[in-house]
Length: 391
Image (tube, rainbow, N blue to C red; front, side):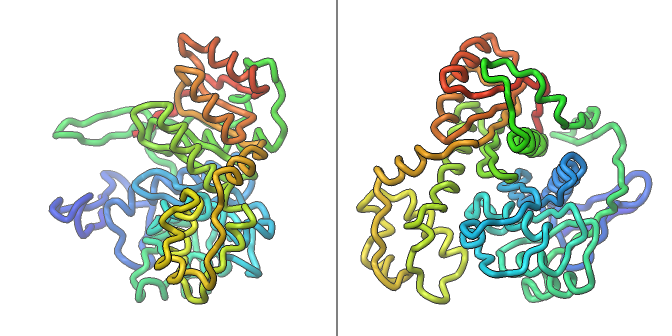
Protein backbone atom coordinates (compact mmCIF):
# COMPACT_ATOMS: atom_id res chain seq x y z
CA UNK A 1 0.00 0.00 0.00
CA UNK A 2 1.25 3.47 -0.86
CA UNK A 3 -0.21 6.65 0.55
CA UNK A 4 0.13 10.41 0.54
CA UNK A 5 -0.75 12.30 3.70
CA UNK A 6 -2.90 15.40 3.21
CA UNK A 7 -3.16 18.53 5.34
CA UNK A 8 -6.88 17.87 5.96
CA UNK A 9 -10.00 16.59 4.21
CA UNK A 10 -12.78 18.65 2.64
CA UNK A 11 -12.63 21.03 5.63
CA UNK A 12 -9.87 21.91 8.12
CA UNK A 13 -11.63 20.04 10.93
CA UNK A 14 -11.59 16.76 8.97
CA UNK A 15 -8.35 15.10 10.06
CA UNK A 16 -6.49 12.91 9.44
CA UNK A 17 -6.66 12.78 5.64
CA UNK A 18 -4.76 10.86 2.99
CA UNK A 19 -5.01 9.25 -0.42
CA UNK A 20 -3.78 5.70 -0.78
CA UNK A 21 -3.88 2.50 -2.80
CA UNK A 22 -4.65 -0.85 -1.18
CA UNK A 23 -2.66 -2.54 -3.93
CA UNK A 24 0.08 -1.18 -6.15
CA UNK A 25 1.61 2.27 -6.34
CA UNK A 26 -0.20 5.58 -6.53
CA UNK A 27 -0.36 6.69 -10.18
CA UNK A 28 0.37 10.30 -9.24
CA UNK A 29 3.53 12.11 -8.24
CA UNK A 30 3.62 15.54 -6.62
CA UNK A 31 6.34 17.58 -8.34
CA UNK A 32 5.68 20.80 -6.43
CA UNK A 33 3.45 22.11 -3.67
CA UNK A 34 1.21 20.13 -1.34
CA UNK A 35 -2.19 19.36 -2.92
CA UNK A 36 -5.17 18.87 -0.65
CA UNK A 37 -8.16 16.54 -0.57
CA UNK A 38 -10.38 18.59 -2.90
CA UNK A 39 -7.38 19.29 -5.14
CA UNK A 40 -6.96 15.57 -5.74
CA UNK A 41 -10.69 15.07 -6.33
CA UNK A 42 -10.49 17.77 -9.00
CA UNK A 43 -7.22 16.42 -10.37
CA UNK A 44 -8.39 12.83 -10.83
CA UNK A 45 -11.77 13.78 -12.29
CA UNK A 46 -10.35 16.40 -14.63
CA UNK A 47 -7.58 14.07 -15.81
CA UNK A 48 -10.14 11.46 -16.85
CA UNK A 49 -12.03 14.09 -18.83
CA UNK A 50 -9.06 15.41 -20.82
CA UNK A 51 -7.64 11.92 -21.36
CA UNK A 52 -10.94 10.77 -22.85
CA UNK A 53 -11.28 13.91 -24.99
CA UNK A 54 -7.81 13.29 -26.45
CA UNK A 55 -8.55 9.63 -27.11
CA UNK A 56 -11.86 10.43 -28.81
CA UNK A 57 -10.88 13.44 -30.91
CA UNK A 58 -7.12 13.03 -31.36
CA UNK A 59 -6.66 16.67 -30.28
CA UNK A 60 -4.93 18.04 -27.18
CA UNK A 61 -7.47 18.83 -24.47
CA UNK A 62 -7.65 20.86 -21.29
CA UNK A 63 -10.12 21.38 -18.48
CA UNK A 64 -10.67 23.90 -15.70
CA UNK A 65 -12.27 22.35 -12.59
CA UNK A 66 -13.85 23.80 -9.47
CA UNK A 67 -15.36 21.66 -6.71
CA UNK A 68 -15.29 18.46 -8.76
CA UNK A 69 -17.09 19.86 -11.82
CA UNK A 70 -15.70 21.51 -14.96
CA UNK A 71 -16.08 25.25 -15.38
CA UNK A 72 -14.66 24.70 -18.86
CA UNK A 73 -13.23 22.04 -21.15
CA UNK A 74 -11.82 22.44 -24.63
CA UNK A 75 -9.85 21.08 -27.54
CA UNK A 76 -6.62 22.51 -28.92
CA UNK A 77 -8.03 24.48 -31.84
CA UNK A 78 -6.60 27.87 -32.94
CA UNK A 79 -7.99 31.08 -31.45
CA UNK A 80 -9.32 33.92 -33.55
CA UNK A 81 -8.53 37.54 -32.67
CA UNK A 82 -11.67 38.01 -30.57
CA UNK A 83 -10.95 34.91 -28.48
CA UNK A 84 -7.34 35.98 -27.97
CA UNK A 85 -8.58 39.29 -26.60
CA UNK A 86 -11.28 37.65 -24.47
CA UNK A 87 -8.79 35.20 -22.98
CA UNK A 88 -6.02 37.78 -22.40
CA UNK A 89 -3.47 36.00 -24.59
CA UNK A 90 -2.96 38.84 -27.10
CA UNK A 91 -0.03 38.19 -29.42
CA UNK A 92 1.32 35.32 -27.32
CA UNK A 93 2.77 32.41 -29.29
CA UNK A 94 0.37 29.54 -28.65
CA UNK A 95 0.78 25.80 -29.06
CA UNK A 96 -2.24 23.53 -29.57
CA UNK A 97 -2.15 22.59 -25.88
CA UNK A 98 -1.96 26.27 -24.88
CA UNK A 99 -5.00 26.99 -27.07
CA UNK A 100 -6.89 24.19 -25.33
CA UNK A 101 -6.03 25.62 -21.91
CA UNK A 102 -6.93 29.19 -22.91
CA UNK A 103 -10.30 27.98 -24.18
CA UNK A 104 -11.02 25.87 -21.10
CA UNK A 105 -10.10 28.71 -18.75
CA UNK A 106 -12.04 31.22 -20.87
CA UNK A 107 -15.39 29.40 -20.87
CA UNK A 108 -16.47 30.79 -17.50
CA UNK A 109 -13.65 32.90 -16.14
CA UNK A 110 -15.43 33.89 -12.94
CA UNK A 111 -16.05 30.24 -11.99
CA UNK A 112 -12.51 29.28 -12.98
CA UNK A 113 -10.97 31.67 -10.46
CA UNK A 114 -8.75 29.47 -8.26
CA UNK A 115 -9.31 26.42 -10.44
CA UNK A 116 -7.55 23.12 -10.93
CA UNK A 117 -6.25 22.67 -14.48
CA UNK A 118 -5.89 19.40 -16.37
CA UNK A 119 -3.87 18.83 -19.55
CA UNK A 120 -4.03 15.79 -21.82
CA UNK A 121 -0.46 16.19 -23.06
CA UNK A 122 2.95 17.00 -21.63
CA UNK A 123 2.80 20.59 -20.42
CA UNK A 124 4.95 22.84 -22.57
CA UNK A 125 6.38 26.28 -21.80
CA UNK A 126 3.68 28.12 -23.76
CA UNK A 127 0.93 26.50 -21.69
CA UNK A 128 2.82 27.01 -18.44
CA UNK A 129 3.14 30.73 -19.23
CA UNK A 130 -0.64 31.01 -19.58
CA UNK A 131 -1.22 29.15 -16.31
CA UNK A 132 1.38 31.35 -14.60
CA UNK A 133 -0.76 34.46 -15.12
CA UNK A 134 -4.03 32.95 -13.85
CA UNK A 135 -5.24 32.49 -10.27
CA UNK A 136 -5.11 28.71 -10.00
CA UNK A 137 -4.60 26.07 -7.31
CA UNK A 138 -2.80 23.47 -9.37
CA UNK A 139 -2.40 21.40 -12.50
CA UNK A 140 -2.27 17.73 -13.48
CA UNK A 141 -0.63 16.44 -16.66
CA UNK A 142 1.18 13.31 -17.89
CA UNK A 143 4.45 15.23 -17.84
CA UNK A 144 6.16 18.62 -17.96
CA UNK A 145 9.03 19.95 -19.98
CA UNK A 146 11.90 21.22 -17.86
CA UNK A 147 11.14 24.81 -18.88
CA UNK A 148 7.42 24.43 -18.11
CA UNK A 149 8.12 22.99 -14.66
CA UNK A 150 10.50 25.84 -13.86
CA UNK A 151 7.81 28.36 -14.84
CA UNK A 152 5.10 26.67 -12.74
CA UNK A 153 7.36 26.44 -9.71
CA UNK A 154 7.45 30.25 -9.59
CA UNK A 155 3.69 30.49 -8.92
CA UNK A 156 2.27 31.15 -5.46
CA UNK A 157 5.70 31.91 -4.03
CA UNK A 158 6.93 28.48 -5.05
CA UNK A 159 3.95 26.61 -3.59
CA UNK A 160 1.89 25.99 -6.73
CA UNK A 161 0.61 22.42 -6.90
CA UNK A 162 2.02 20.44 -9.80
CA UNK A 163 0.95 16.80 -10.15
CA UNK A 164 2.16 14.29 -12.71
CA UNK A 165 0.03 11.25 -13.52
CA UNK A 166 1.01 8.01 -15.21
CA UNK A 167 -0.92 8.13 -18.53
CA UNK A 168 -0.84 4.33 -18.73
CA UNK A 169 -2.61 3.89 -15.39
CA UNK A 170 -5.86 1.91 -15.60
CA UNK A 171 -7.98 1.78 -12.42
CA UNK A 172 -9.68 -1.34 -11.12
CA UNK A 173 -13.06 -2.09 -12.71
CA UNK A 174 -14.88 -1.73 -9.38
CA UNK A 175 -15.13 1.54 -7.42
CA UNK A 176 -15.71 1.98 -3.70
CA UNK A 177 -16.45 4.90 -1.42
CA UNK A 178 -17.66 5.26 2.14
CA UNK A 179 -20.66 7.38 3.14
CA UNK A 180 -21.70 7.59 6.79
CA UNK A 181 -19.70 4.47 7.54
CA UNK A 182 -21.33 2.49 4.74
CA UNK A 183 -19.25 1.28 1.79
CA UNK A 184 -20.71 1.71 -1.69
CA UNK A 185 -19.49 -0.41 -4.61
CA UNK A 186 -20.17 -0.03 -8.32
CA UNK A 187 -18.59 -0.77 -11.67
CA UNK A 188 -16.69 2.15 -13.16
CA UNK A 189 -18.48 4.13 -15.85
CA UNK A 190 -16.18 2.98 -18.63
CA UNK A 191 -18.66 3.47 -21.50
CA UNK A 192 -16.71 4.76 -24.48
CA UNK A 193 -18.11 8.00 -25.86
CA UNK A 194 -17.96 8.03 -29.66
CA UNK A 195 -20.07 8.85 -32.71
CA UNK A 196 -22.25 5.76 -32.36
CA UNK A 197 -24.12 7.64 -29.62
CA UNK A 198 -25.12 10.28 -32.19
CA UNK A 199 -26.71 7.97 -34.76
CA UNK A 200 -30.28 7.82 -33.43
CA UNK A 201 -31.64 11.14 -34.65
CA UNK A 202 -35.29 11.31 -33.67
CA UNK A 203 -36.20 14.72 -35.10
CA UNK A 204 -37.24 15.80 -38.60
CA UNK A 205 -33.81 17.39 -38.94
CA UNK A 206 -31.60 14.31 -39.20
CA UNK A 207 -28.23 15.89 -39.95
CA UNK A 208 -25.29 16.75 -37.73
CA UNK A 209 -22.32 18.52 -39.30
CA UNK A 210 -18.83 17.27 -38.47
CA UNK A 211 -18.37 20.28 -36.20
CA UNK A 212 -21.61 19.53 -34.39
CA UNK A 213 -20.61 15.89 -33.91
CA UNK A 214 -17.30 17.02 -32.41
CA UNK A 215 -19.02 19.46 -30.05
CA UNK A 216 -21.75 16.99 -29.04
CA UNK A 217 -19.07 14.44 -28.12
CA UNK A 218 -17.33 17.19 -26.16
CA UNK A 219 -20.61 17.78 -24.31
CA UNK A 220 -21.11 14.09 -23.48
CA UNK A 221 -17.55 13.57 -22.24
CA UNK A 222 -17.75 16.73 -20.16
CA UNK A 223 -21.06 15.60 -18.63
CA UNK A 224 -19.55 12.23 -17.76
CA UNK A 225 -17.33 13.99 -15.20
CA UNK A 226 -19.76 16.73 -14.05
CA UNK A 227 -21.77 16.53 -10.83
CA UNK A 228 -25.40 15.73 -11.71
CA UNK A 229 -27.90 16.91 -12.70
CA UNK A 230 -25.97 18.56 -15.49
CA UNK A 231 -26.35 20.20 -18.89
CA UNK A 232 -23.53 21.41 -21.14
CA UNK A 233 -23.41 23.91 -24.03
CA UNK A 234 -20.50 23.85 -26.49
CA UNK A 235 -19.41 25.70 -29.61
CA UNK A 236 -16.26 25.80 -31.71
CA UNK A 237 -14.52 22.95 -29.91
CA UNK A 238 -15.02 24.25 -26.39
CA UNK A 239 -17.54 24.22 -23.59
CA UNK A 240 -19.23 27.62 -23.20
CA UNK A 241 -21.60 26.89 -20.32
CA UNK A 242 -22.08 24.15 -17.72
CA UNK A 243 -25.02 23.79 -15.35
CA UNK A 244 -23.94 21.34 -12.65
CA UNK A 245 -25.38 19.86 -9.49
CA UNK A 246 -28.90 21.19 -9.87
CA UNK A 247 -31.97 19.34 -8.62
CA UNK A 248 -34.08 20.33 -11.63
CA UNK A 249 -33.21 19.73 -15.29
CA UNK A 250 -34.60 23.11 -16.37
CA UNK A 251 -32.45 24.86 -13.77
CA UNK A 252 -29.39 23.11 -15.27
CA UNK A 253 -30.42 24.29 -18.73
CA UNK A 254 -31.02 27.85 -17.56
CA UNK A 255 -27.80 28.08 -15.58
CA UNK A 256 -25.68 26.70 -18.41
CA UNK A 257 -27.58 28.84 -20.94
CA UNK A 258 -27.00 32.01 -18.94
CA UNK A 259 -23.28 31.25 -18.81
CA UNK A 260 -23.25 30.53 -22.55
CA UNK A 261 -25.02 33.85 -23.20
CA UNK A 262 -22.40 35.75 -21.18
CA UNK A 263 -19.67 34.00 -23.18
CA UNK A 264 -21.36 35.13 -26.41
CA UNK A 265 -21.72 38.70 -25.13
CA UNK A 266 -18.00 38.86 -24.40
CA UNK A 267 -17.60 38.95 -28.20
CA UNK A 268 -19.64 42.16 -28.45
CA UNK A 269 -17.58 45.13 -29.70
CA UNK A 270 -18.62 47.22 -26.69
CA UNK A 271 -17.30 44.55 -24.32
CA UNK A 272 -14.09 43.99 -26.28
CA UNK A 273 -13.60 47.74 -26.37
CA UNK A 274 -14.11 48.47 -22.66
CA UNK A 275 -11.54 51.18 -21.77
CA UNK A 276 -9.82 49.53 -18.82
CA UNK A 277 -7.04 51.36 -17.05
CA UNK A 278 -3.54 49.92 -17.24
CA UNK A 279 -2.68 47.54 -14.43
CA UNK A 280 -6.21 46.28 -13.66
CA UNK A 281 -5.87 42.62 -12.67
CA UNK A 282 -7.54 39.85 -14.61
CA UNK A 283 -9.89 38.89 -11.81
CA UNK A 284 -11.10 42.49 -11.46
CA UNK A 285 -11.51 42.68 -15.22
CA UNK A 286 -13.54 39.47 -15.29
CA UNK A 287 -15.81 40.60 -12.48
CA UNK A 288 -16.31 44.02 -14.03
CA UNK A 289 -17.01 42.58 -17.49
CA UNK A 290 -19.65 40.23 -16.09
CA UNK A 291 -21.24 43.09 -14.13
CA UNK A 292 -21.19 45.27 -17.23
CA UNK A 293 -22.84 42.59 -19.38
CA UNK A 294 -25.43 41.76 -16.72
CA UNK A 295 -26.28 45.34 -15.75
CA UNK A 296 -29.33 47.25 -16.83
CA UNK A 297 -28.66 50.54 -18.57
CA UNK A 298 -28.39 52.22 -15.17
CA UNK A 299 -26.62 49.26 -13.54
CA UNK A 300 -24.14 49.36 -10.68
CA UNK A 301 -21.12 48.97 -12.95
CA UNK A 302 -21.77 52.46 -14.29
CA UNK A 303 -21.85 54.08 -10.86
CA UNK A 304 -19.46 57.00 -10.67
CA UNK A 305 -17.02 55.36 -8.27
CA UNK A 306 -16.74 52.11 -10.18
CA UNK A 307 -16.15 53.44 -13.64
CA UNK A 308 -13.52 55.83 -12.30
CA UNK A 309 -11.80 52.93 -10.52
CA UNK A 310 -11.58 50.63 -13.54
CA UNK A 311 -12.01 52.69 -16.72
CA UNK A 312 -10.18 55.60 -18.32
CA UNK A 313 -13.51 57.02 -19.53
CA UNK A 314 -17.11 56.23 -18.67
CA UNK A 315 -18.18 53.31 -20.95
CA UNK A 316 -21.41 53.39 -22.88
CA UNK A 317 -23.94 50.91 -21.46
CA UNK A 318 -24.72 47.68 -23.28
CA UNK A 319 -28.47 48.12 -23.61
CA UNK A 320 -31.05 45.37 -23.27
CA UNK A 321 -31.96 45.87 -26.92
CA UNK A 322 -28.31 45.49 -28.00
CA UNK A 323 -27.95 42.32 -25.95
CA UNK A 324 -31.13 40.84 -27.45
CA UNK A 325 -29.98 41.74 -30.95
CA UNK A 326 -26.51 40.21 -30.42
CA UNK A 327 -27.78 37.00 -28.85
CA UNK A 328 -30.52 36.74 -31.47
CA UNK A 329 -27.86 36.20 -34.13
CA UNK A 330 -26.17 33.32 -32.28
CA UNK A 331 -26.53 29.90 -33.89
CA UNK A 332 -24.64 26.63 -34.17
CA UNK A 333 -24.47 25.94 -30.44
CA UNK A 334 -24.58 22.30 -29.30
CA UNK A 335 -26.11 20.96 -26.10
CA UNK A 336 -25.83 17.73 -24.13
CA UNK A 337 -27.79 16.53 -21.12
CA UNK A 338 -26.74 13.78 -18.72
CA UNK A 339 -30.36 12.50 -18.46
CA UNK A 340 -33.56 12.89 -20.43
CA UNK A 341 -35.44 16.16 -20.84
CA UNK A 342 -38.78 15.71 -19.06
CA UNK A 343 -40.37 18.74 -20.74
CA UNK A 344 -39.98 20.80 -23.90
CA UNK A 345 -39.20 23.90 -21.82
CA UNK A 346 -35.54 22.81 -21.81
CA UNK A 347 -35.48 22.92 -25.61
CA UNK A 348 -37.19 26.33 -25.63
CA UNK A 349 -34.53 27.72 -23.27
CA UNK A 350 -31.73 26.12 -25.26
CA UNK A 351 -33.04 27.60 -28.51
CA UNK A 352 -32.85 31.08 -26.97
CA UNK A 353 -29.08 30.53 -26.66
CA UNK A 354 -28.63 29.51 -30.30
CA UNK A 355 -28.72 25.74 -29.84
CA UNK A 356 -29.22 23.87 -33.12
CA UNK A 357 -28.07 20.35 -32.11
CA UNK A 358 -28.86 18.30 -29.01
CA UNK A 359 -27.86 14.91 -27.63
CA UNK A 360 -29.63 13.42 -24.64
CA UNK A 361 -30.54 9.90 -23.46
CA UNK A 362 -34.27 10.07 -24.16
CA UNK A 363 -36.72 7.89 -22.29
CA UNK A 364 -39.15 10.46 -20.89
CA UNK A 365 -42.89 9.80 -21.09
CA UNK A 366 -42.99 13.20 -22.82
CA UNK A 367 -40.33 12.44 -25.44
CA UNK A 368 -42.91 13.18 -28.15
CA UNK A 369 -43.40 16.71 -26.81
CA UNK A 370 -39.64 17.29 -26.56
CA UNK A 371 -39.20 16.07 -30.15
CA UNK A 372 -42.05 18.29 -31.36
CA UNK A 373 -40.44 21.31 -29.69
CA UNK A 374 -37.17 20.56 -31.48
CA UNK A 375 -39.03 20.21 -34.79
CA UNK A 376 -40.67 23.62 -34.25
CA UNK A 377 -37.17 25.15 -34.16
CA UNK A 378 -35.49 22.89 -36.75
CA UNK A 379 -33.16 21.51 -34.06
CA UNK A 380 -31.50 18.15 -34.75
CA UNK A 381 -31.64 15.87 -31.72
CA UNK A 382 -30.21 12.43 -31.06
CA UNK A 383 -31.25 10.02 -28.34
CA UNK A 384 -28.03 8.38 -27.17
CA UNK A 385 -29.71 6.10 -24.62
CA UNK A 386 -26.74 6.61 -22.30
CA UNK A 387 -27.35 8.24 -18.92
CA UNK A 388 -24.30 9.96 -17.47
CA UNK A 389 -25.05 10.66 -13.82
CA UNK A 390 -21.94 11.40 -11.80
CA UNK A 391 -21.80 11.77 -8.01
